[in-house]
Length: 173
Figure 1 (tube, rainbow, N blue to C red):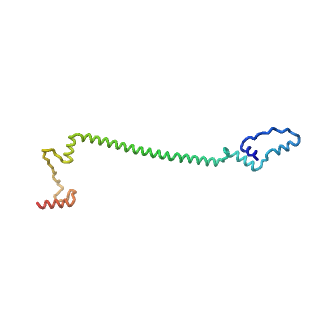
Figure 2 (figure 1 turned 135 degrees about the vertical axis):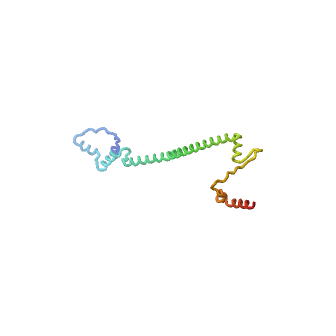
Figure 3 (figure 1 turned 30 degrees about the vertical axis):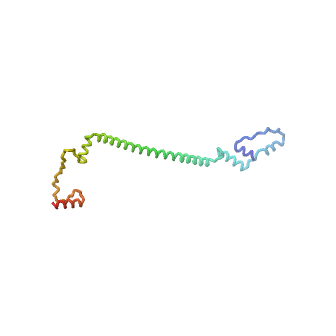
């Protein structure tokens, strides 16, 4: 039985030197030494011939190969996803950095412009209404247009309590 297994696996068995031939009984002895092939040994030989490497069938090899490929895909997918996410984040941060650099340039230009005393004085006159000592400030009020009939229907966007207060003060004069 052990000899049959080794033959099936393809291993060589040690050979014994041939015995001297005797007439008559040698043929019957030779037949008894040869292994008898029964159904079990035939199927093992067929299975051994079709299984290939390591005695694993082709279906099992395909399943193991699919399992290995899935494991490799899962192993690669997480770092690849992290790489793509970091590249997108890097692009967003670079875009934000460019916007901030443009804002810094604009603020630097404004600071350089406002470092001039003439510009500061002009801004104080226009925005704050300041005058230099000795000047007389004048406030020019534009005349009302022809569409305003003086009825007070257009209150200029003032709240009602200011209109009421103004009318109270004008009425006491």
